[in-house]
Length: 309
View 1 (cartoon, helix red, strand yellow):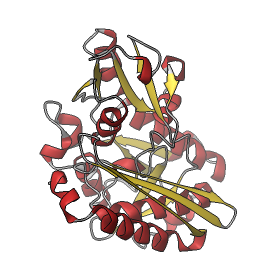
View 2 (cartoon, helix red, strand yellow):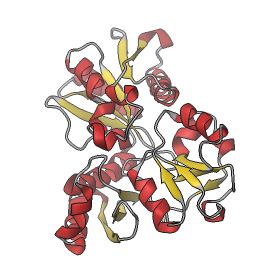
View 3 (cartoon, rainbow, N blue to C red):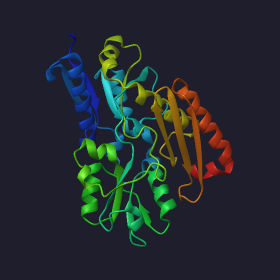
């Protein structure tokens, strides 16, 4: 397949680059093209630059995508590679998510210095996490622990852990595996007790709407089951809020033509929790996510969401 060099936009962290390289490798294999047919373009985002406060205070998920999406709209890049869990549910006009690579293991990974398991940490131990979902789940399971904001890329957080700033931290298993750091994991947290963020473990590719040549390039590397699962999860997310201010989890599993979904919302202190389940045809993924979001919102009641503002 002949075309000009395809420009792949990405953040500059080691994990973001690993995901861009994985996308490039899959495109090379799918189209029998050399590496020179693709250029990886690193773009610094506001989210990368803000390290002194929670993203929820600075503007939310879009801080990791804004500058990349501007480059896509300006045609400085042809595709953007993202971690799906970083993507806002509302995209800029003219852009769409065109492909999802096959999902990695979506579980959270615990890396402990003081103990190998979350449940075994000493009373009052300090655990670092930048995710409100993870913070709330930690507090739910271990209200005695001190949970602190832990910003930075994977390597920065691991360095802070090694320096003893915290007794443990949590990261996505998928990211650690992509970086070849799975041997650092001391515990994989079970999906039922510690459900993942919507989209966790999946790489998504954003393009300009109607860019037929690019979409034709991406078609062979898209994974349909992952697309359907994330359609459900992102629909659930959009129904509730979809920003970094929301401690919520959602995970869909596709089995043939059947979809099973489980969702959870928590107060930031982890004391109040509501769970929801849904299942049906995989082709109804968006509707199932929407319905689950509406039902859990009704179940929790309007007062519950006051703590999210």
